[in-house]
Image 1 (tube, rainbow, N blue to C red):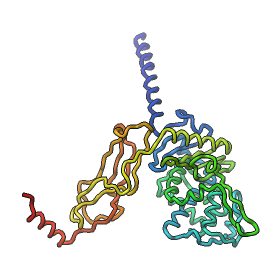
Image 2 (spheres, rainbow, N blue to C red):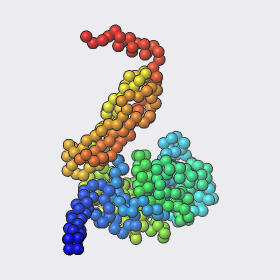
Image 3 (cartoon, rainbow, N blue to C red):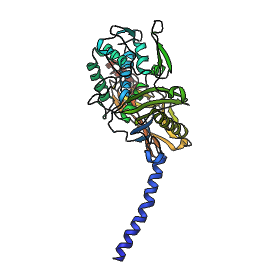
Amino acid sequence: MKKRLILCCMALLLAVPLGAVQARAAVEEPGNTASELALAEQAQSAILIDADTGTVIFEKKSHEQLPPASITKIMTMLLTMEAIDQGKLKLNDKVTTSEYAASMGGSQIFLEPGEEMTVDQLLKGVAMASGNDASVALAEKIAGTEKAFVNMMNEKAKELGLKDTHFSNCNGLPVENHYSSAHDIAMMSRELLKYEGITAYTGAYQDYLRQETEKPFWLVNTNKLVRFYSGADGLKTGYTSEAKFCLAATAKRDGLRLIAVVLGEPNTKTRNSEVSSMFDYAFSQYALHPIYKAGEVIGKVKVHRGEASQLDLAASRTMNVLVKKGSQPADITQKLEVPDKLSAPIHEGQMIGKLIIYQDGKPLTEFELKAASSIEKAGWWTMFKRTASHLFFVDS
């Protein structure tokens, strides 16, 4: 009996330092939890990511499904910017306000039924004043009805792989079956930031609508960080009595762009303070390490029966990884995973393989590699000349 008791005590003693080592290791890597870093302590849910790579630096109950309030409008702005990018919508297009859009309560820019505004003006109303009426007006312009637009929002959420999200309206007013998570909001924010022009709206502190009328409307950004936090230029605030105070924020310094999301904060002061602390932590501890510049050739793949005999694999954009400051370049290694040979035809944008980046032997991130150009199947004459060259022009 004594022997068994001694063995149990030894096992318990051995377990304690192991747990301590695991806790210390967690602080050293991205993806830290709230108890380890004492960040976002008052938030019900939170996340902090690097916008470039999507690396999670910190998270707290980030997949919990919660009411997002007006942060919903990030998806509304995303679909608007997408429509502009695809040429389906122009910034100077006129939008006529419907009675339904004008009837929205809560935050608004007080649109009147039949009033006309441009897409540019309505985007200001959404991004800065969180206009529920402006959101519906844009939704109706893009999809015909808000219901059809909400279907587009949910389809986009599926396309982005957002599993914690379902929309029931385009502005975040309280309604059943309308929810998201800090994680999903960060991912849709990251997608929105791919449209560089959006921060001209989300990062402006003040502006005017109806400036040349008898009733000019002064816009002041509901996100005060764009004025008081260095590098902050978006993205969206939110509040309802159910959701409490929410914020999806972004800031950029020295080439590093961060996205922070907090949900369920008790008040605006705490919300802004906790997001600022999240930014302070990441900017002080992390940096982007460049791997390849845009256009730089990463590798080559042989092409069977193609008009070109090989395909260059080039970086479609600058490839970076997020690392702790002070990390040595020698710690970063890479592995190219592509086929030995491809068969023509190859289409531009076709998935070819991936580049995996490691730090100290552990996977850090990966980049998809796509064909930068098309390679058609070679005709008989091209194949004949290629074969002939091998037959008659052999190295001595």
